[in-house]
Length: 107
Image (tube, rainbow, N blue to C red):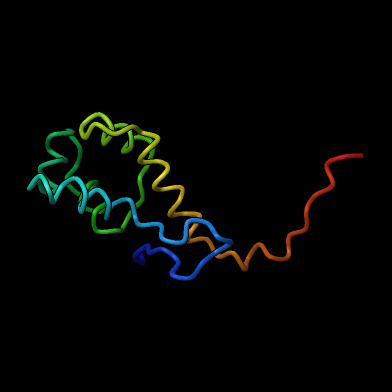
């Protein structure tokens, strides 16, 4: 599976500098506390690879993972899901949708 990475150019003026959620987990939570991905996984009762794949940018944050991270780290599940959603939007191929016209909703 290819590594996920944010779009480097500006896409429609939003989410320009979105960062991968696993990088935020590692750089802003684990590293400052001196905690390894494996140690966090053990604390959460999760497979070690689940957290390691997240911090290695190989998988995204699921709702389930967001709930675990929120409880363990004091953030909210919405925080983790917002990071993932922002990253996904920034990583989307905007050109794929350029030909889509607005649907006429009013009669």
